[in-house]
Image 1 (cartoon, rainbow, N blue to C red):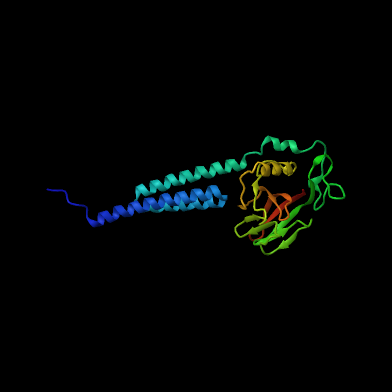
Image 2 (image 1 turned 30 degrees about the horizontal axis):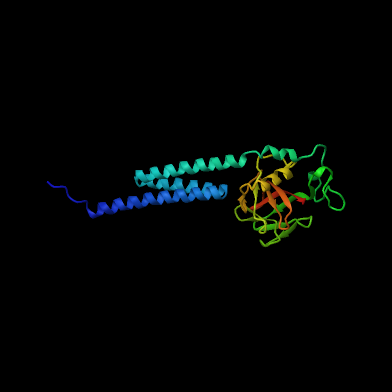
Length: 249
């Protein structure tokens, strides 16, 4: 007996399987790109989406598609781990040489400068602090610290230095939209030198980040002053307590 041509239903099933495979590959690629370019939140969402897709394909007994989803899940997980390792790498050793010898109290005096009375840098070349304090950012609320004291803002405009959006997404100023990850790089002492190193080296930055307790970032205020922040803890419904230090430059 001669071989019969595949039934139309079988051909349709094969085409559906190919389409599902392509969809899985595209989903994994998009999730990977989002993870590398953005924040840890996208990594988590991508992993959840791929895990759900793999479970669905296993339930439908589509082994090939489930295998592709598993591979994409593995690749995304490795990419997320690599991104986390890159963020947790300490700052270059050169950054530690910028702290002058001798005691300094620049970061221990809230909302005050340790420089000369006319605002010039302190002796020894240390950056003069003109704001250093803990501020509370509620959900969809910003703060302007360029005046030496925190002024709350309820709209993300050109004068806002930091703005906390829904989902703990923290934005830097719109005029200088760059946040450099300083998490695990060291304490507040020495942050001025580290932040200067990041800017001079044109280190990879982002205009916003998903933030959690203990994370540290260097940023620039709307008026161009270098700043450093550390997320102390979450506060209220979607808010956060943030230690902010800004230097006069």
